Length: 57
Image 1: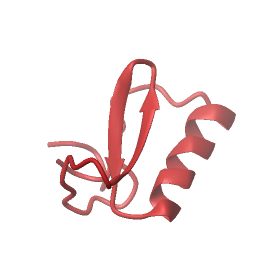
Image 2: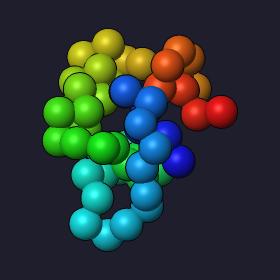
Image 3: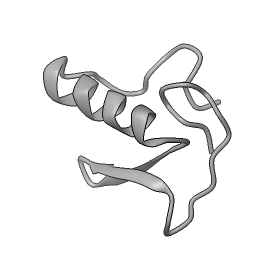
């Protein structure tokens, strides 16, 4: 699984940086990427799927 913000490979583990949004859990490589995602979805009303570097393939 890839971090939607930076594109880094991440694991779905209990201790991971994660955030639930609209019933789905998203995983991130760091607190910074998790917070960036949270800011984008709450302020910009991002629509999914995201495109670009961090988009899932």
